[in-house]
Amino acid sequence: MAKFSVALSLLLLATPVTAFAPQSAKKSRINSPSIQMKLSTRVADAVETTSSPSSVQSSASADKVVQQPQGKVAREKILKEPALWEYNFGLQDPALTLPHGIEARVSAPEKFELTEEQIQTLEEDGVVHIKGVFDEEWVEYLRAATGHQVKNPHFWAFAGTASKLYDYIQRNIWQTNKAFADFYYHSAMGHVLAQAGRTDEIRVSTDLLMVNPNKGFKWHQDNQNGPITWDEGIRFWITMDETPATYGAPVYLKGSHRNTVVDENAVFVDIEQEGLEDYKDKLLEFRTMPGDMLIWHPKTIHKVDGPSDGIWTSYRRVLGGTVAKAGTVYHDKRGTGGVLSDLGRHGLEDGNKLSSPFFPIVYPRFEESEARSRDSGSVGRDPRDIISKIGGLAGKASGEKFSSFFKVLGSQAK
Image (cartoon, rainbow, N blue to C red; front, side):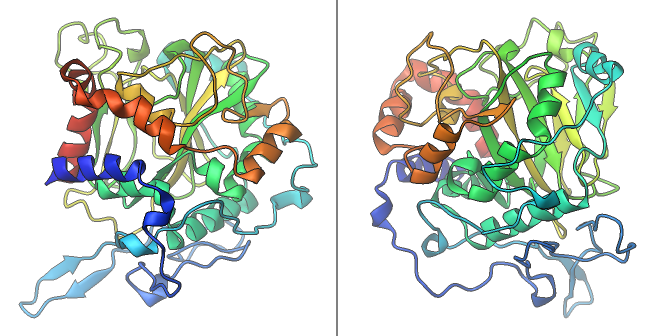
């Protein structure tokens, strides 16, 4: 069944958007009226805690339970998978007010200073936890944007959601949801990542909105980084919720970005394999809080363990992805799993400078022309490029190159 879901997902990626017209009347997919998402600019928490009003509210609430006739207690997922007719197409705009009086597409991006020690930690360990980058207003903004997105699922989330990897997952969310584009243009994210990478330019290569990773993601490295190399990119996580006490905390193998034995096309990693002896026991676990950032090298081996039954009864919302440093060039990754994070019709060819509205600059400042291209709808995935770029799946050799990626989908869907 997992293989069928993957094949169906890839087929639907190339299907004209007019094939599935969403119904106008939609029922909420959030299981309990008490945890309906609020879409104002101030509140997007699905589950309120009893912490102080002045603090950033956490969505990690007590488990929602249902009393069974036999006296047993069953856990219930906080989100239901969207029905096919619930998906939306085209651009979406939650119409949120930016924090701190920021004027959209006018104000300069904010800044947040890192220490030299933090930058060196990233370089030496392959990962660094930066606490409190985004304040309460920014966290609430991101929660509201996420709440709107989950309530109005986009067609480009279909493949990932159908794979059962996450309750909701959508790549290149900034292309379809204006609130996330504005976040990149105006928040301190670009400044933080520029310092971390010791670079004077940051472009978004690819991103992901991820809500509740079901059973988690076992030991792996990131190869869905867009059309760039390991050393040209920086991975990031921006967390909107408190990490549960017993699961959900990312764990990294310290220094594993220096390993020379894991194939670049691999996703899952066997940490017992020869050549990883120096890393497999050096565990770094991070219990992130709302507004924190995790930054790591794309080759750093890591995992996230979800609840044992795969049921998230609270929210774990993360905005993550990969940015490209100054001097990055375009790498055509057709025939490998890496192509799945580069399905736009941007016209770049192998070796070209990575400069395009499809990979927008966010530091030192966004470019108005790139923002206009995004707002016009000319930036996004194209069925013609989807067909040409993933067409290699039909061949045996290419299928072998994709095998690690499909193992991820299959194993997580069980």
